[in-house]
Amino acid sequence: MDCKHFVNLIPEVLLLDPEDQTIEETVMEEFDQHFEECENCRKIFDFIGLIDSTLISQSDMIFGGKDDFGLDDNRMKILHPLRQVSLTLRKNKEFNKAIPILEFLIGIGDKPLANYLFLALGYTNIGDFDKALSTLRKADLQDVTEFDVLIRFAQAFSDCGGHEESRKLYEKCYELDPENKYVMCNLGSAYTECREFEAAEALLSKTIDLYPSDPDIYTVYHNLAVLYYETERMELAIEMIDKSYEISPEHPDIIRTREIIHNRAKGKPVILYLT
Image (tube, rainbow, N blue to C red; front, side, top):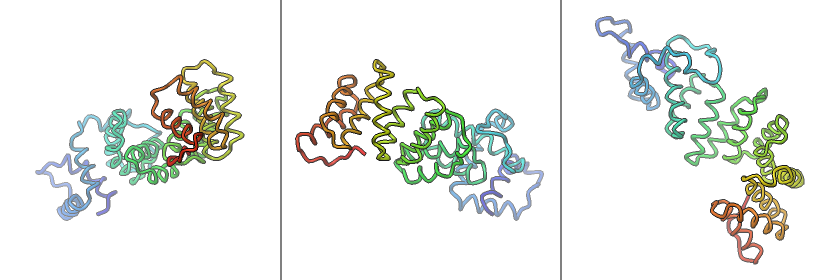
């Protein structure tokens, strides 16, 4: 018995009346055998068994689109509560616990973009950046135009090292909202990661011109400092990182970057690199 067949039978097994043998004995034997052999299916079965049956019929548990997955009624009954469990875990920032559920949902054909995004966040959260990146690359973002979706995927790609993909998505966000300071700052950083230094400097400088007194401007100064460091303009790098440090002296990234830049300027060996 494969996983898809197993998950189709879970509602019948959970609701099985011992007096009404609606499932053939040989099928139950196969079900039990698969339960013993497949750890992932065992977790899914246990999750479903703990969920109040009233959740099964609540259509508002669906996120990420319609129920048009070509799945039969039994499997749809499973998807509703599984999505709810996944959603609850994600709201609690327990991304790593959501990993087996999201893997299972995607594996049986339930593939809204949210599943790919949060599975990738789960992998990133446990430090498995290769899996996070490969998961994000499976999401079909070609026709996506919603700003909120694009920016979340852009950040997710950046977090696991997919800087080229991140740059392209931030560029789409920039087209939709060309004066969004968050987008400008992060697109500038993405340009630096992709070694497009002129574009990075122009955009980050523009951000400072537009938002000189913004409380988060220290992030832009920090990103400019990294850019100047990468292009070996050390005086400018020191000027920018010191401005950033003046505004936010306790930020760990700024402390680390400042130490690296000042050590490099003094001719000390630098073991850690910024990009």
